[in-house]
Length: 140
Image 1 (cartoon, rainbow, N blue to C red):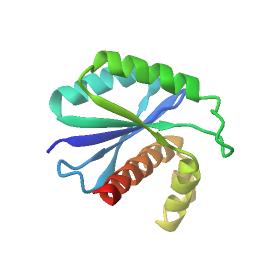
Image 2: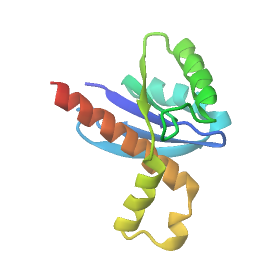
Image 3: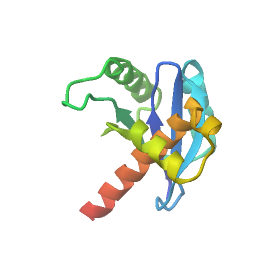
Image 4: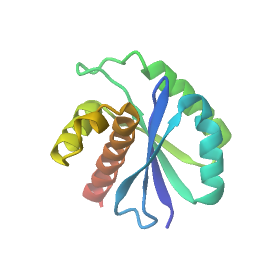
């Protein structure tokens, strides 16, 4: 089997998470500076077989598009053009940053490390991926 990649796209940084090849476990991959994201993805997908990319869709709590949603949609268009055979889908990312901070607190990560925005982005991508994978299990 191949992996599923999740993207928590941001204006400055983008968090990435990936599944294991059996698509059972979601794990943080890294955080990439957004201007270098496409080059990173091209390099990564040349080495790893990726079946699907799940892109977090930023939406306000009331369901309206967030300020970042237009950037996410524009990036997703470029991603689909660069990888035309790749399955790319959106996933609601509301509250993932809050959940990432809670996860960091519960895991005992120190205060200084919890302020690392790159780590928050990576954990947010992992939460997006885990949620996506759990929803697929429910439909099987």
